[in-house]
Image 1 (cartoon, rainbow, N blue to C red):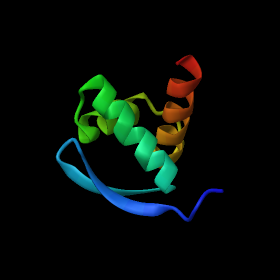
Image 2: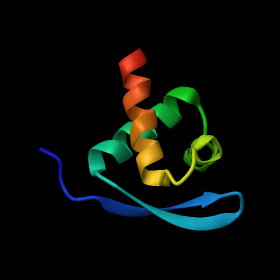
Image 3: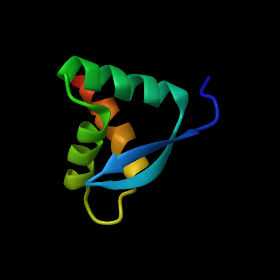
Image 4: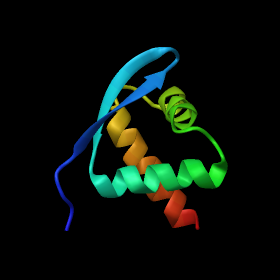
Length: 72
């Protein structure tokens, strides 16, 4: 069962922002960044740049993680 979202700070394009994700998604996001040998902030910036419309960053990260593991 999923626990409550945890807020963490990220730096996107030189600006600090906070993102709330469930711990399981933080773990998956960190694992993907490690697998890609990409800093977490850089991966978040890539996801941020690819967002559409009013999609929130936290939602975009969750979908990114889901899609990554669906392809695996």
